[in-house]
Length: 264
Image (cartoon, rainbow, N blue to C red; front, top):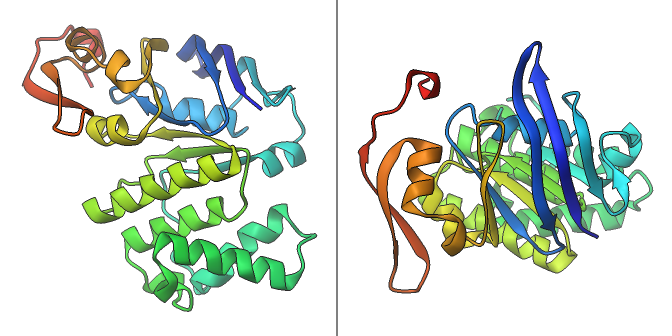
């Protein structure tokens, strides 16, 4: 199973966001970081792959084009976590995860479903939240429960839109460690939109850096991240150095002068 993104285009009305986006094949076990400035199309790409936005081109997963697949097929194969936090409802956190699992796997026996939910709560380190109501949880805690809702389904393709945005550093590391572990165990693929370049460089096998409607750079972090790329994609003057463990580390020195069409 691999994912092929071929000439993908997405527009909001008459305003194109992605125009002919193509990427090298993404293979099982890969955690792929989607990087780029605000408005580069990271969330747009994830929403299109999840079937929430009309798109043209092809997104081939295991021989099936996600853009033409049935809703039922996509629901089973794809797990999408949006930026918006799960609703602060009266449901118990356990019940919200059970509902997500039953939506795609109604065939599971109760004991099997319960074991899967307990396992994901334990792996994420949030077992103490299971019997608390969603309305009693902080934003970061609800974000962790939202991640559990996606991971418990064991989809073939994980689409995670800024899953660490409401979390402190310890939980950011826990999220990325768990997602990397799950895609390795299941032979799945994860695309994760993330603003922290150094976290992406530490955990992701490959980076896709978006800008101007397409892929500006792709490849392993040490290959994709360069000073020229940082200037082109983010409008900064920066350096890429190796940390003591050999991972690339981005150091931003200053905001570069950018043209009017690249401003927020």
